[in-house]
Image (cartoon, rainbow, N blue to C red; front, side, top):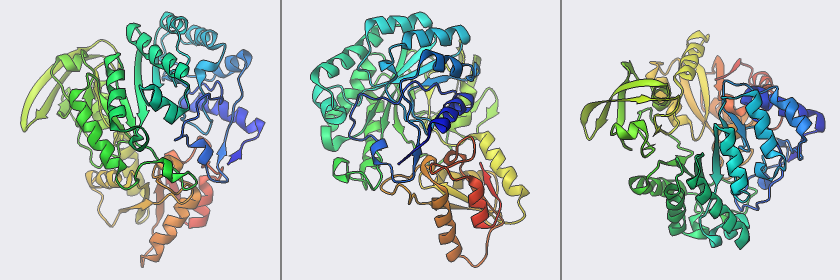
Length: 454
């Protein structure tokens, strides 16, 4: 791991606010999660550690946020190591500052739940427009002790905090990292039910991933865990009164199938259920799940055709606000991104090589087919993550080194070359830097062909 210097950390804090609408408060965390990735990063990975930021620092950063997008606190969405935001002593005042600056902008806060109190929940309610994501991981004292290092008192406070959220007007979701090898499948089931029965809008079940520097004996069987968790989520979806979502989804097609529906939501009242497939929405044919979800997220009337069990029917409802339909779907591919991909391939002076993560390569191949691009124009090639190793397969953790190794492997197996490379934009930050602080232009120079991020 290669911590960044103070000047670069300050720049990254402002860049994260400006480009990702992330408000960083602190990297301090009071959990000792066995699955925490930060302690298993390989050498050379540049991360930013942020101390407890002062009100003056926070006030300056707020000026870089946008009212047009959700403001995120505590979720690891940038190279900044996110800590537990509820440990910041000035959090209620920070929320007040945000509300004065952005009266109507949604704010999402991720927490481990230990520090939820009636007073803090009341302050969040008073602010309005706040939602929480509670990384509960287990609804048992034993489970949280094993997974997060909780004391019995810390577990009690977290579970009571979720129950208080259920009695409040705040919207919240829950999450758990699936470690059945340590706590058992019954503990996972009980945790999903606990969150759902206490009013969670959705529950994310996260498949654990680890680098080759981690103690693999702590983790479940890498060969079977993904399929096992997928089956578990499918089974819980039938019974739970809220959507239960697999993360990462690793969609392999673009079928706009419903993963879950929030009980009592407009879509729920219209009869939409998990497994329904949307054909069109408000007269528009759909490219993907992302396209469908965006079409459903508008404020106003929704008219759609859906397929269930081979039969097509029409449904309609009215959404009072943006994103209020209640429908959840796995993430697959944004149609605007697909359009850009098509333009890049069409504008190339020869064959394009699309380097994709192991998780994303299959769906990228489907996108290429949907765009009508033949084999002579584009080829998709899966990139192994050699930087982290282990079970890491996501695009956001690939580096220039990984792409160069993949390109070398591809070239050694081919008699012709490519005219350009297209790589996932998730691998690079706002300045075009990967996790080792190497610029995407280094990839272009070493490859000897143009490189485009898409």
